[in-house]
Each structure stands twice: as C-alpha cells, then as structure tokens.
Length: 437
Image 1 (cartoon, one colour):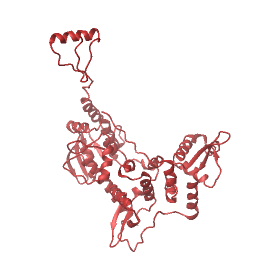
Image 2 (spheres, rainbow, N blue to C red):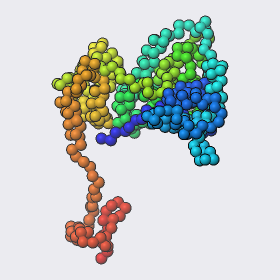
Image 3 (spheres, rainbow, N blue to C red):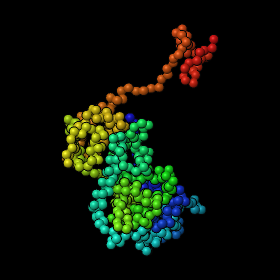
Image 4 (cartoon, rainbow, N blue to C red):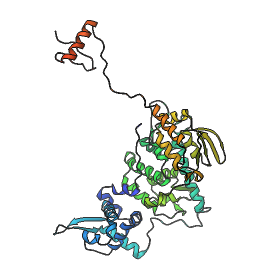
C-alpha cells in the first residue's frame, strides 16, 4: 500500500522560498527582522550578532575559525540557513576566496532594535477598554480546544452524516493533501491523514500554515503579504488585546481563518472588537528543535486485542475509531478492541499496519511504555498478517484479443504470431488486424 510522506517544514522554509526582491522587502520592517532572528539556529544567531557592526566582508576561512573543528557541520547548517534567507550574501574577492556580508537593510533594522528597544507592529489596547480578558492558562486551553476541534472536523469530514464547519478556505487546504473529493459522496481521507495525526501539534500547525500560504495565490493573495502578516502576528504579546480596526479587510479574513486553528481569539466589546494572539501564534517563528518533546501516552493494549485509552479527549476517541471498534466510553476511559473487521476498514481508508503500530507505540501509557515491547508481539504480528491478506493477489497488465472472424482464422493467426509478426498488427483498440492474404 503506497504511503504519502508529509514533511512538516519550518515556517522559515516558506520565508526562504520567496523571491529575492520580496524577501528584501520584508526586511524593511524591523519587527519582521526580529522574528527572523528568533527563528535562527543558535549558531546562526551568534554569527548575525557578531557581524552586526562589521561593515566589511568576512572571509569564509575566518568564520570557520570561530567554531571548534567538531562543530563544522553545525557551521555549514548555520551558513546555509543565513544564505537562503538572504541575511548573508556570499561573493568572491580578487583572490577567489568566498566572503560573507550581512544584508544592509537587515543590519540597520537590528541595530535600531538594539539601540531603541523592541519594535512592536501595533500597540495593545488599554485595559480600561477591554474587559474580561482570558488568562494565559485559559487562553492556552482555548487554543488546544480549537485545534482539537479542527482535527475533529478533518476526521468527521469524511462522513456524510456529519456536516463540516470548516471555512471554505480551510476546506480547500484539506482537500489538497488530506482529503480526496469523490464525484458522488462525501470526501475521503487520504493515506497521509494518519501520518498527519501522528505529528505533534507544532508540526501539524506548520503543515497547515504551509498549505495555507501555498494556496494563497489561488485566492489572489500575494504570499509575501501573508507571510509578512503571520510574522507580524508572531511578534505580538500572548494574551494582549489588539484592535481589529487596525487590520485591513484581507487581514480580517485571515484572522477569521486563523481563529479556526486556535491561533487567535476574537472578542467583541460595546464599541470595539479585538483579537488576542495565543501561544500557537507567537510560536510560529520559533525553531522546531524545542517542540519535539514526547507527549505522555494514554493507550494500553492487551494480548487479547483489548484496548484501553485513559483520555477525556474526543479527538483521541475518533482517532482510535479509525482502526478499532469502540465498545463504550466513560468520562476518562475509552474501551475498545482491535478486530479484523475494524482493521480491514482502516486498510481500505489508506491506513497502513505500520502506522497503526507506530501510533500505539508512541502513545503507550506510562505504565507500559517502558516495557519491551510496549505492545504485545502477538497483536503487532496479527495486524501485519491481516494487512498481508489484502496483498495476496497482484495485478499485472495483460492483453485480451477477441472478435476473430472464425476459429480457423484464430488458430492461423495465433501460429503466425508465434513464428513472425510480419503482416499482422493491432488497431487503436489493441485488437489484432487480419494479416494480408
């Protein structure tokens, strides 16, 4: 069964893919330069700060001396990222030695940032206008609930009896890689959905944002403008309220789409309306290295194929329903069973046996996570065997010849085909033409 790989690239990879002119235009905003600086790897940040007040080119050999010999690989990664983002420009001097120089616009804005302080894209609203702002804890709960609701809509969108509440913009993004629209009937989950659900929250978010930016041209939106707004949003302060009237009409439509993802929370006052960025929005420009921590598992699988999930999440229940039979659900416990029928339904929907096993291993409950193996071997072996039952018969291309005038001519033509192909051939439908007499 073919599998589609989903690569959750960093948001900065989308920035680096912009044309040189649009990328240089982004650096005219000081807060975007700050967001770009925060996204860089630690060694790349060190190089930028170290060259911030140097106006002459630095040779590549000189920069190699800034790190120990065992850090050469990290050095190459840092230089490559800085060049792709056009923060560094590489040239060759008279001696044909490679030299690096920092982007002058980027350099000037960072110097102002260090001397004048932090530059905010817009000022927060005063507290006497905004009332009952959510706390940081409540805002984080809201963001996770919105994101979980979005994933539930993704899973339930393949069921005709459950109407989808996803906006048309987000539905088009899902159909690009996670849903396949059939001529008659509801959309169907693709092979890549389960792999998408296996990712952590930040990786899932970056994938959706990447598709949202890639789809912007179909909505007559410049990707550079959308990237600039997302970088601006990442520079806002989490939990602060910002006036919605300071946004343009197209930015207000973007805010509504981002609300579905849990990046912002909208509130309405007596005379004013405002948006509140969540932690998901302010972490857009943060490097991926700090977001790959393992989440605590919740699933226990027994040797009799019984499954126990200690969770209150509706999303977890719907994910388990994709490959198991849910028998009953308590407030904090989901009880089910892995059956042959439930797995065949999963295989028909494009979910592979290894994906199911990986999901169960990565989400094993702490009381069984330290076991080797955490999932009983008879269960994993049986899952693989049930999948192999579907692959016993292989399809190979073949040719079918028919509509011969008589049995005598059929035998005569067959013998000629075995001896020589002279005087015979096939028509546009693949049928054998009569040999010339």
